[in-house]
Image (cartoon, rainbow, N blue to C red; front, side, top):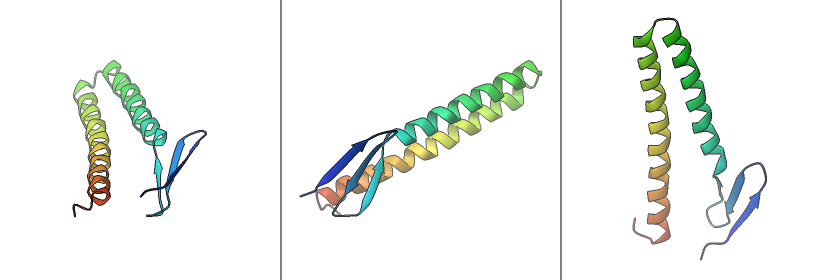
Length: 88
């Protein structure tokens, strides 16, 4: 049985008493949105300066950073589900 307390404030924080983990939900969404906004601004500035190739590379680098973050979250999800059902 898993007992979870959730507190809603600036971000959603859930604490799992059995494993001692803290899950942060809104924080990761804000990080991804911040990266997206920053990359979009930098890419637009580079395009206006005539550096379309570098703007494309910056956009691809931002995409890779976000994909690494998402893959890490999916890995944690699979580990949590596996531990929940004692699959591993």
